[in-house]
Picture 1 (cartoon, rainbow, N blue to C red):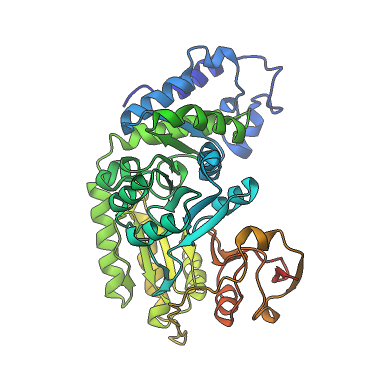
Picture 2 (cartoon, rainbow, N blue to C red):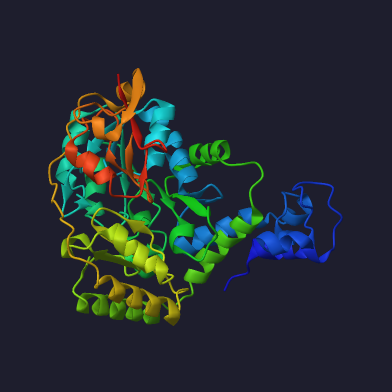
Length: 439
């Protein structure tokens, strides 16, 4: 593996047994290591640590590994990358075309910058958000000439991809920008490089902490467009802390360099064997382009996913996401045999549950009554969710994690929306289960 520059710089500082009259307040005291790890390595941006520009050189190393012109490490997760990407191109239009199931960070930065979202891929099929296609993108671009371009989630939360080369061509024909939220696709550069977002996007985000051996909040934002480098760099500086965690920075460097030298054959074989065993218990497993994701259709077999989640957690198995139909398990080479054995044991236990859960295939698109920006800036009131049928939502509310909406601000709230929000782990509602609607 290439030299781990950030880790080496921090280790060198720690070995000097420094007296710290600088941030952070814990001063590297060993007593705190029992609470949150090796506190000695949690350091601030001192010249003695970064005198060889360790972070900058590490970013250049990782950019070379990924074959990109520009890369910045992030300690604010993919959210900081999404904010930076959109901010970098904010002057090129008044709208942005997005998939309706976009992450809440996309909606947040559009609200902040007063950019109107234009929605594609609005429907639901078989309990999953539909995927965008080039014809839909072409129409959206033609209908909205004042759009900056397109921002899509790729791969989606379930590991599904779509024809990004065709969409790229459609975007470029209009002279627009293609941005990609690749929060769930950082590992594609190594396990499925032909489908990696970096081959197609103008700016994209890799959520390293989601799929690489990286600490929480570690991510990267990248571009191959020389004309966007300065704008993107400035944007990252705006949305990033001036006191980044060197532990997180070091872990992003490690994650990229480690995966660049990892043989994934063994773990992929284990995951495939695990999928076959799950199918043997009568469940369907979603087939996707992400070899590390195991999405099990509980609802389709009459099993309540939330009840199944409780059984799994009793067996010490903790999933990434639970919807009104599916449970998503995210694996990596750092999962051991014990983990997969527990998963299979937990799945086996769920087979004993009553098959009394009915799945309704909601394929219809939502009814939009107001534009997104108009809705979130309207006068509002907060009411019980059960009383919200027919009202216009003033917020996004949906599946948590990963924070994609079931209802978007400006849409009419239906009985199906209420039913779905009532049976999932949800964001967007108050603690009392109330929802904000247009008054």
